[in-house]
Length: 86
Image (cartoon, rainbow, N blue to C red; front, side, top):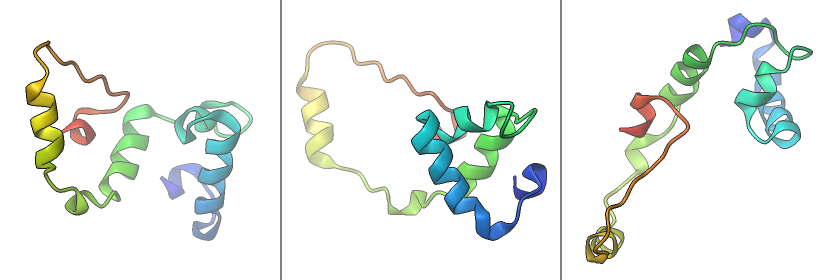
């Protein structure tokens, strides 16, 4: 993604934070023409999701039991790609 954006490595954390604060999500900020032209959703997600520490996520038995105790159908909506959802 850094190569796609043509920016220095050291500027990335600040840029992501600034875009998040200004636009609500980094993705939306990247799509603003004044920032970057042609940022691709799939490319962005593929880049940022590989870097997430998924190994720290652990099952939560209390949360699972709470969900199972609710009698109605539960749907989870995610504004992301399939890799991140799984």
